[in-house]
Each structure stands twice: as C-alpha cells, then as structure tokens.
Amino acid sequence: MSRITELPDDYEERPRSEPLVEPLKEPLSEYKSPSQASSDSPEAFRAQAEVKDNKSHNSQTKDAAASTAPSLPPPLASTHGQSPEDMLSMMNRTPLFMTTLDETDGIGGENMDLEALKALAYEGSATEIAKNFKEQGNERYQAKIWKDAVEFYTKGLAVLEEARKRPKDQEGVKLVQDGEDEKDAIAIAETLLVNRAACNLELQNYRRAVQDCSKALTFNPLNIKAHYRLTTAHLALSALREAAAAIANALSHHPGNSSLLALQTRIKDKQTAADAKERAVSERNRTAKLKMQALNVALKARGIRYRVSSKPPELEDAVVHLEQPTDPSSILFLPTLFLYPLASQSDLVKAMPETDSLQDHLTYLLPTPWDGVGEYTVTDSDCYMETTSGGLAKVGKKMAMRKVLSEANVEILDGLVKVFIVPRAKSGYWIDDFKKTHIKN
Image (cartoon, rainbow, N blue to C red; front, side, top):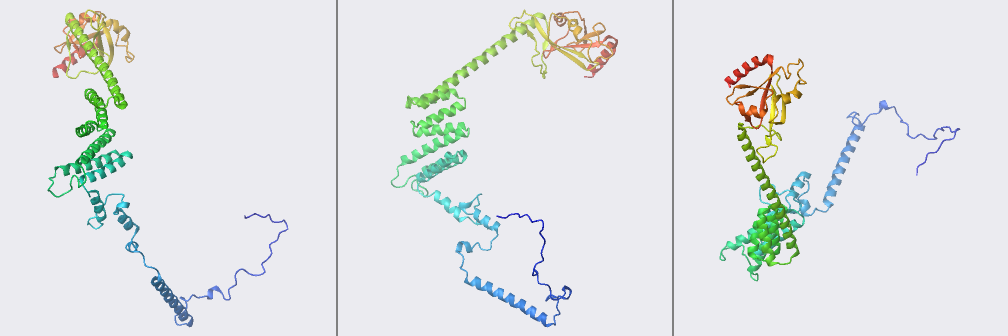
C-alpha cells in the first residue's frame, strides 16, 4: 500500500552522487544519423550493411516459423484470410447459424446443406412426415408462437391429403408404409385439425376454428377437444344458436363433463343477456313508433305543416315533442331559433311551448349583449317568418306560437321554427334585400 510521508521542516534536497543520464561526449549539433552521413564515408557503409543484415535475418526467421508451424484444420484453412463480413455471410448460409433464410451458396447456386435438411423433413411415409410436422407445431404452440404452429399443422395436413389422393401404384410419398395402419393417418389428421383450431382460437380466427373442428368431428365424433373448441368458436362469434346446438351435441357424447357443463352455463348466461337486450331494443322501437304516431296526429290536428329536408341539421336533444309523448292532446314543445340577420347573430330556445308568444321570450332575450347601440328592443323590433312559397310573413309578437303556425302560411322545417328579428327602422331595407336574394336563388 502506498503512503504519503510528510517531510520534516529541516529537510534539504541533497545532490545525487551520480547523474541519471550519462552526458554526451560531443555536442548535439555535431551528431549525424547514418542517413545523414555522407554515402562515401565508412560510417555510412557500415550502417547500410547493418540494416540489410537485420532485414535478411527477420525474413529468414519468419520463413522458419512458417515452415515449422502446424497446418490449420481443413474447415479453418478454408476461411483463413477472410474478412469478418465474409465470415458472417458464410455463417448465415449455415442452417445452424442462420438469422435470415439464405437458400444460395453465396454465388447464385443452391444451399446444399439447407436442401438436405429440407429433404429430411419429407423422408418416410406421409404419416411419419405428418407426425414430424405435428411435433414441430406442438413446440411452437407451447412457445405461444401461434402462426408458426398453424403453418406446421397445415403442412402435416397437406402431406396426408396429397398422399391420400395419389394412386397406390404412382410413385411418391405413400400414405402408410408396411406395418402401419391407415387408421394412424386418420388419427394424425384429426389431431392436426384440433391443434390448428386451438391456434386459430388464440389468433381470433374463429371461423377457421369452426371449420377445423367440424372436419375433425367427421373423423371422430367423440373428440371432446373438437367439441369444446367448436362451441367456443361459435360463442366468440356470438352465434348463440350454433353454440347451443354444439354444446348439446357434445354433452350427448360426454354427459357430466365439467368443462362442457361450464361452457353450457356461459352460453345460457350470454343467451339471457342477449334476450334482455333484444327485448329492450324492441321496447324502445315500439315506444318511438308510438311517440311518432302521436306527434303526427297532434301536428295534423293543429293544422301545422312539418317538413324534413335532405340534409337536416343535428339538433341533439332539441326536438319537437309532446309533454305526454303518447298523448296528442298534450302541450307541444317547439325548438325555436331567433335569428338577427343584420347582426349575424342568433339565439336558440330548445323547447318553446306552443302556448307561448314570441314576446314571452323576447322580453328576456332583448336587449342583447352584442347590441351596443340599443337597436334591438321588444317594442322597436319586428318579427318575420319565411313562408312555404319563399316569401315573408310578419308575425305578431303577442300571438301564441300555435296560432301562428296554424294560421300563417309557414312550416316547421327539420324540426325547427325560425323567426327573424329586425329593428323596425331597418325592416324595409332588410325585406328588399331578402327578396332580391331569394329571387336570385
């Protein structure tokens, strides 16, 4: 361990007895390197000879080392002197080290190692090959790599299907070999279908799961996994009738199975909720129909015109309605829009009773906060409504809205009553401008 020692106060630096570096025997200015010396001087010839001797000695040493070193193994000798990029490219063409699929040998030919591995996957009977694909698919399924698992199961089914269609006297992969039973091939196909259905359920490919399970049940009507997954797929698709039929069929083969019974309970609960929702929707539709019928009767009885355009505005909860929705004789409420065309302003009264007059609402609407000169007052303003023919009708401020709509040639358009408010002093100017605008339109 290093330490720091404090020097005493009377410490004095003493000169060394011997110098650390031997002093030069001649001045630096007179020193010359061998290269600077004259080529004709003896010193220059001796320096050049020493350099040549050193180079020759080093070359002989390297040659001797190379001749006595052991030779590299053939796999390493083939890669000797290659760059790191070339090594990585070569490794990526080796199946064990592949990070991306490279089916070439690096110069455009086939990757023989990869082709050999592919060929191994298709050796033996179709049943053996399908079993191999099934095992690989199961490994992916356990790892939750659903898409890869589906691919392996599909390859196994394709091998079996191709071998089944091929005539027995035709060359190619046989469905079974000597000592194997064709029932084994059917059992493998059944398992592949049920396993692929499980993956499709995880991938939410419910219709494909239905197809796989249905086909598996044609091979074996007792396959409980196929029954369970078929019912689950129908339930996920909200196909409750199909799900109920599937679970009933499953329980006929496996009565008392707890998993199937639990699934049946889920179907019943979902059916109950769906029935309740359907009843609620039906009741809403029935009530809406009754309300509309009552409203039409009320409007017709009062002689009020009502029209809907091709593009009605969105008024949210501001709608024409009856105080008692199904009673045509109850008070009618009208969304009323007060327009101030000369000021480009407006006020909306969402539910104006038909018994109210315009003056009942103008008393709290006027004067407006934006009217700085006080033009808009109840006494000095006139009210107008557009007629069905496109003209204008002057409306008395003290008349009930029900009487206005019944007696004047006006209408409710898109569920909205529109009233123009204009200062009396400017009414003539505005009326002329309105007529000119409507004539052009």
